[in-house]
Length: 113
Length: 114
Image (cartoon, rainbow over all chains, first blue to last red; front, side, top):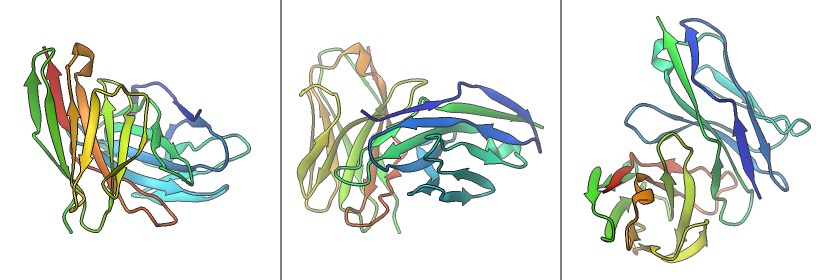
């Protein structure tokens, strides 16, 4: 079955530092890949997506590239802000059928001023 | 455009009781999926409803059931509550038929079973 593995947190960075959160996946076929963000006390917000190999998803300064050869979708940001503090979830869905999302366990990011 | 809404926000129940959670999908969406998020974990897929019928289920027992109504809103029902059912329950709506299948989440219902 499908599975997603994320680096464990918390990840603690100073403001303006470079961020990488690793994500690897196992799936049959060609899944779509997503990053969701969850701020304290809130639901999940879609941050970015990629639907085929070598696609780069980007939003709000965050980027992730769909690497089929390494089955990875690492999240990066060049300069984090305190407001980026949240839990980040990597997820995949099948391209067909019910397309239920399979999530990783989440990585908590703490950005200090 | 109205986003996904869920009610209630918080709920406390006793083991063995039954609970109903409600979700209103985003305008224009015809599919609703439910997820359970235990503390410190990623969400787990419970089931999905499309055209008022269940369209797939995750690894959850039959005491988890649901409904979808003609206006695409949905209910999640859990019978014979157990302590392990304590979690954040998330509803996500989407539009089946698009090439890229994006799910948009509500704020969740926090269920505590004592």
